[in-house]
Length: 445
Image 1: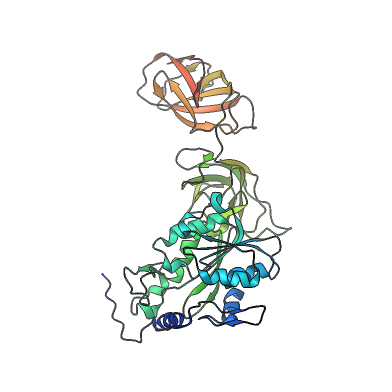
Image 2: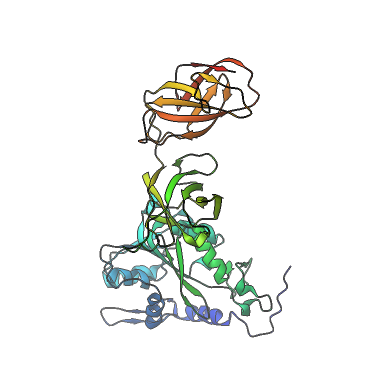
């Protein structure tokens, strides 16, 4: 247990003063309205402009869609609208001051009362830019919230938060660690709705883990940090070297190419590169244009590599190209994965079976590890090793490989046989969805 003895001045004194000022003024944001009315809040207009200027947000946002999460009185929402964006503002309570300013500005900002954990693309769509300013430390589940933010973002999220500093826990060297303090009661500035205090390293790690490809520190102040979190890698230069060769990409556990966007999933990708040393920071993988940082980089053999990574959040229904770059190279060839696509199964059939090693038709030869190759016509485009099942008699075989659609027809499926099967004749059946092939007679040697 860490016991904190802080003999210095209250590190949260400024936040306590802000709270007291808010209770006297009633406004958090300041405004300069068109009729000359000045509304003085805790934050000055100049301070709000400085806070926003920390992020690379263009002055001209025409054609862009912007989401402001935790909008409060709405200054940032209305500023985004002033720059030409279509804006949605979210808060978890219906703030009458937001309505007052919106009416004064004749604003068309779409204001909704919603919980951050309920924000999904299916409910509110996707946004080029998401503002997530001063919200994170108010949340019990900060990483879950950042995953929601990432899924909504198509370009960049502007994220600012209180960060834990040495002055808050002196003597523990916390600024060098990816750790977070959890405030069970009102320990953070006397507010019961302040829950989380991540260090800067923790906040950056949270944003990458949530699914952002690039996380760039924009500003570090006495009270917090501002991060620009991007969904994309920087584009390669025109004279960039040739990229690697992508061999395969699939679910790391099931070998599936089909994914449910509502559930967490991890993928494995395999590629060839002659480089002798690669790290996570060298890899630029992307799916559907969204960059994703690998969790692990493995050299399987000279020139042959594997990376493991999470599925990027926020992918729309459909087929999405996957590719990889190494450092500043051009992208590799692409392979596709399917997001939320149903499996439409029409007529299909087995046109051949053989021992996968010897190629002998209709016979699986005896050896320590036995594999069968099956050729099928008419499989659905998104058939994969997880949704195609192979039975030899009553035994379910382990499907280890299936040709991708379009590579050739018929498509080849390889399955591994368990060791306990006895020699003799057995019936092989392939099932996809509710459909199954006619039995195909196979001899086990």
